[in-house]
Structures are given as structure tokens and as C-alpha cells.
Length: 155
Image (cartoon, rainbow, N blue to C red):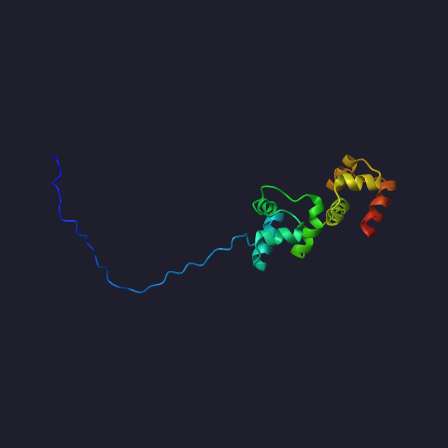
């Protein structure tokens, strides 16, 4: 059955009672309270300082998309960026080292050295250095002195 044609084109308006109210919602923080991953630390610090990603990118001498990827944990900073990141954060986001290997890895990262670079400096195989850092192997006496010297002065 066809619908009847309506020739009256009036607009109907419904009046609602006037009332004044305000909605308020507490905004959640755009970062975790206790950051665990370096990108989360960067995100938290950036928001605390009221900075944009491009501002942080300029300070760390990287592209703003790099900051975005770090904050979203899509990529992780290369070791040579770590000294600048530590300076930006005002602290090292890695847990405090406890073992000799952890102390070596911590010192290496804080200087921005790759494992390959430090292994070459110490004249030790990169895999051997990795085993020292992870606690799989303990250094022999001749390497122990080199590691102690590295820990004390970075050379």
C-alpha cells in the first residue's frame, strides 16, 4: 500500500526543560604510574614536562617518529642513544646492577657502548662478553682486571 503524500513541510520542534549541569570526568594519565620499559619512562617524563614528541626528539637528536615508536614500545633505543636518554630522564631506567656482569652491562650502556665496541676495547670475544654480562660465565683473572678497570674509569 503506498504512503500518503504529505504536503505540509513544517518542522516540528520539541522543547526540553532547561537544566544546568556539568559533567566532569577525571582524565586518566596517558602513561603508566610505574613505567617498566624505557619507552614508558620517556612518555611519562615528556608528559610531566608538558613537552611534545618533537621537543623530546630535538633534545635527543632523533626523529619525532622515533620517539613515537619508543613510547609505543614498537622499537627500542639503540645503545648509543642511552646516555642522552639517561640525561633527559634524570635517571637510568634500568634496575640497579647487583652482579659483576650487570655492573659491566650497566656501565657499558651508560657510556653508549655496544657490546661489540666494548669487546673490541677489552680485546675479548663479543660472545664471551655477553656471557660475562648475563652471568652465564665468570671472567678469568686476566679479564677480571680489565673489567675492573673499565668499571672504575670507563677505559
